[in-house]
Length: 174
Image (tube, rainbow, N blue to C red):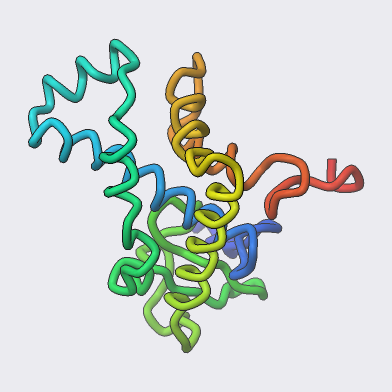
């Protein structure tokens, strides 16, 4: 007997909104910081690996230069799309999120761009980090890099999943 395909179902936090936006922003910031190492070492992968192995941090000017304009890249943010699910609801799909645009048929794309609100969420994350000593995101990046057994997108946990952040689970959801 042929197997009936299962309907795709979104989970809380995967819909277009503060949690998915935070995860998208954290992904962008983490990949930007990784790229900053490649830029700093002029693309020398061995030098990047040595810096990471020695846990050598970037000079402050290098990581700040990498962050300059990172939130303004609308071409990047336009890669995020929301899709209507067959089972109801919608999800945000794009780099660093649980859903990929290739998971959905093209006719399921919901109209509109997420570039503005994702750019706004990115700027808000940088402003929040600057409220302290300005290096909060970089410190979170290094704490995640140094943590034994940390997951691939550790900056999402640091910026989005802690108490009071957009993806933090409430007690009644546990």
